[in-house]
Length: 346
Image (cartoon, rainbow, N blue to C red):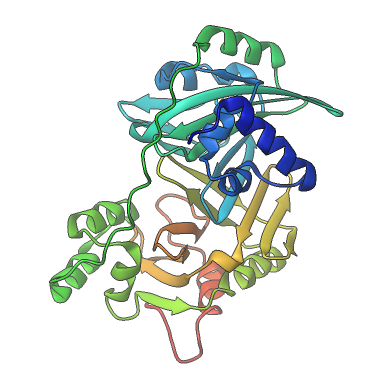
């Protein structure tokens, strides 16, 4: 039997009192609900009209905020503003020097604004969820954000609470059968731009793990799960600028630049830098690959981490300028992750 929102919130408060640092996603799992249901039960939540174009183009007046995108195993937090968001149909795009985002609005379904009073002052945030109740993006105001703009946005988009309908999550895709491996490898090698890779996988109907297993020789090399920690520590020690992609069904968020403060706390591997935080559950890394993909100026290497369902956790690239090959120091850093008897094509 479903719990009334008030009963759910009481159960959450009881749980939270015993575990103050518990994240909302983990609390929802412990209570056998989705995070969206937990947000809807919060007495401080205001339901917002799901007019994504209007909502997203109304975020710029908030000023500098912290944008959060996560999946089950990784949390990506960027500080910036939404002044450069562009929308076209069911996709959205934000580019540096502010936030760097790719938004897939066909997966967005529910939105809430929350204002919570704490001993350190009010905490204001916006939360966006897909139809499965999973958070696609959250936006947190900072001390220097514009609270009056937040209040105006809430008043503009406020709607009465409605019946919350949550769909069951989709099943993990099964490996494809009957693949013409030689044709697949030939097409992989014929690609000429990194942005052709995702459509290429869709055409073949292949999950990433299977695609990497079938890749042309030297283009995808399995490495151990500890490769991510070695990569981050190496990038920090040598000043190698990187790109960090974390996404879910509804959004991908990207950090570009150097990383500095790498710290492990239990199963969490963290980056604690001004303007960028990363929190990676290393115990949920089921597979890790160094991959060489076609680029406009030669192959581009990445480290890709996958979970037990074969879904992407996080992808690391080297920073590069358009029209330029990848930096040799990034190529060397990736090569250092490989077993001595393995190599990826250069």
